[in-house]
Image 1: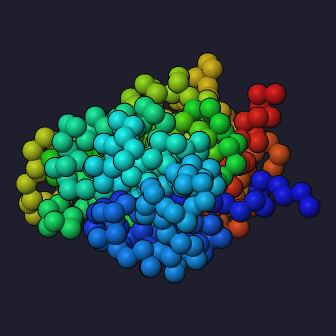
Image 2 (image 1 turned 30 degrees about the horizontal axis):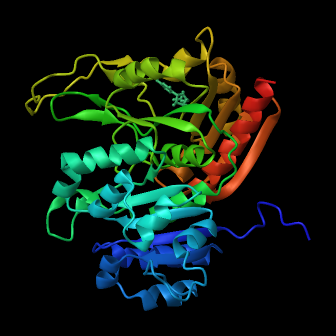
Length: 401
Ligand code: C5P
């Protein structure tokens, strides 16, 4: 029987280092196993102080390795054998000490040795106290890891085990699981550069008030994630949202439509594909007061002026990237979507029903391109994003062949 790539069992080596977030690695292992991924666990000595290896052994159905000098391995080459038998190594949590070791090529225990001896990609999910993370030494080490093509997942902001609040929390098991799933996606956009706008824009009325569209940013962030999985180099320009951004090449936070336009103008020439998912406010107040407007009993008139159409600007450039627009419609989806596509001169427009999609985790997508209409039936946004990326990759290839 011929085993194709998609049928082949996916294999992950899960490295666990010493940190309170180690308990979350058990949940991560469970998610991976449930998805049919084979998990081999390696724990450092410090990790074993936080979490019992029996837990991981029971979850993964495989003995957990902790020692460099393992007599059960016939050739005493556990560090080589283990790293050769997997598609990717994910270290979660990765402590400051472990990151420092990897950055300097140290190899004084099983996990660091097999990372040094690996011939597969390595991903690390840092987890540490915020001050350890902010320390210039840790920052230097993380930069070194990135230069060495090691994927750094997170960390996130939030309450820490030590009681402090700040950057340094490990990403949640679900987020790490999605990063692993991403890793196994077909590399349909290898070496392609993609610019994505996401979230709403915020248009200031005064120092404390503003106009904002309802947009969670979930679809744009899912597309950034899916594009990364497809091997693309992603730049994400985002309005204010409450999401952790994926490990993109460049993340540019903005506030207003004008800020977004400036950022897009700066970035667009470096990109092959532009996906405009952002819910850009169509209007902004003619005057943004720098002081808070005092409350009174009188009516207050607000003069609104139109914002620039960012997507239209990009699509009309002399040498535009492959442009994809989004349209959230409340009625007459087909007619509105097709007329928007033609007006903005887009090879592809993705429409959804605003009432159904806003803030939700699932959505139905309708794709309009020169070949007609395609429906992506209701599914989680990350799955829709992966399907959409596959569609974009196919169209982009057609356009350039
Ligand atoms: O708001 P509208 O339905 O026209 O949005 C369609 C597409 O145009 C979306 O992809 C949106 O990101 C983009 N757009 C934009 N700048 C605007 C308004 C919309 O880039 N000012």
